[in-house]
Length: 75
Image (cartoon, rainbow, N blue to C red; front, side, top):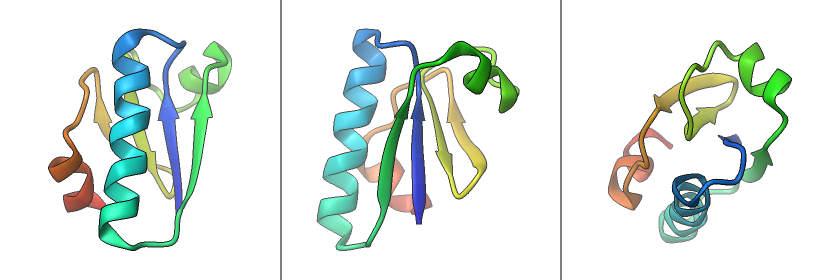
């Protein structure tokens, strides 16, 4: 599984990244977690507000910091 956290490095983006790491650890799933900070790459997903979460190429959250429980629900 490939999980991408889209964001330019703001506090909410960092929180989402940490929540993703915790959700993956708690779920026991095998996942590659990537932080994407380059604006052209973020725009390529059609995301207009960050942070955003992409799981296997599909945007699942945008414009909010998802909780650990919410992330576990989509992975």
